[in-house]
Amino acid sequence: MSLALRNGRTDTGAPISLTLRGETIANLDPSPDLPGLDLGCRLLLPGLIDAHVHLDKTLLGHAWVPHQGGADVRARVATEKRLRAGLDWDIGHQGDILLQRMLHAGTTALRTHVDIDDQSKLKNLHAVLELRQRWSGRLKIQIVAFPQSGILHCPGMPGLLEAALSEGADLIGGLDPVGFDGDMDAHLAIVFGLAETFGKPVDIHLHDGGATGLRELHAIADRTRALGMQGKVMVSHAFALGDAEGNEFTRIAENLAEAGISIMTSIPGDRRFPPIAALAEAGVNLCLGSDNIRDAWSPMAVISMFERAMLAAYRSGCRDDAQLRKCLNLSIENGARALGLPPRRLTPGAPSDLIAINAPNLAAAVMDRPEPDLVIYKGQIVLNRIAP
Ligand SMILES: [Zn+2]
Image (cartoon, rainbow, N blue to C red):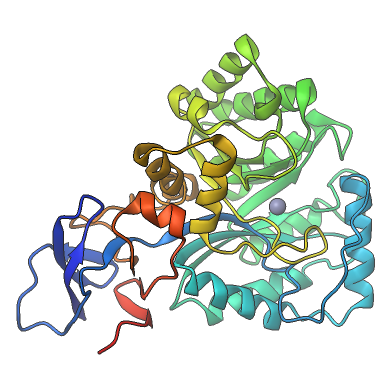
């Protein structure tokens, strides 16, 4: 099935028309006989990528739950477990609402972490696998088996993680090997051991900052290289990169670049985060994720990756067009590299996951954060607000 898109505009303002066939862009010169859409001079760009979300945590669609939080990661994990046990929590319904809003914001691929622990066991995974099935025609979902309660001291782990990987999780996760589990080597040995056994990529939550976080980042990079897993490992948050300066930063950035490790940041508002320009200069792939959306960890609901790019620009002091474009590219080119997806471009052979927006260029889109008028996934229209 082919679809023609006519009368769009690229970031430079040049006119563009193209033919989509199945999962790819077939050519840039659609035949007049093909069924198609007039984009009305809208800006055409690849669908956006949210590299880190928690579909099983969101409380969107639930009655308002006042934030309770906790002093540190361990206290917040306990709060979330208490809430999960006491609330009428429906991952399918709440996840549907979040996915609907993501799609309406132009996200066509995402990576979700799913809690695997002694309380929920594989229940959350099963619910998210169902969500993925239901949404399979509308956006791409990667699933990380995430040990939110740690691995070493949580009963039943790592057997539960093994079961999760057998039952459909795409990646193995980890959590603060030192700060949460208290034994860096033992924690990483299990995570990378499961990655090797199952042939799966790795995505580790690393909140540990300062010297501890840097030591963990070096250890993750070393294990990645030793296993030949370059390009298959992501570290989420990596706040230690925001704390590091001078030679310390140069050394860790070089190690991460050589190991092909991607870094994900949600652009937190209350602390230093991995520096966008310095990491790009060092050749480290940085991408953006929304992380917590209206859940036990945060009441915020910043869902659009245009909004996330704006936050990146705002907190990094980016103002000129080239810088703003780079902030959005964190959720396009960099996001694709981080998730191991084909490069996203408006050229033949690239994925036919596209959006059309009312904006003159990408820089303006970061400032104005428009809702897309058109979302296409695998060559199929999944959202269309363009008047016939
Ligand atoms: Zn997270």
